[in-house]
Image 1 (cartoon, rainbow, N blue to C red):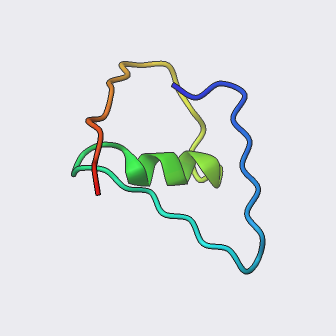
Image 2: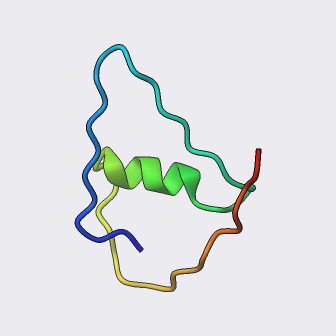
Length: 51
């Protein structure tokens, strides 16, 4: 779970969200952009991805 998360990305910078299918990448993006409001519920850890 993220608590007190802060992210600053300049106009010329790019970021990537990596993880296995079903890990919550799209959900995280929706929450960060406030497309959805967070709600209480079950949380699970995502497996690490190695490059």
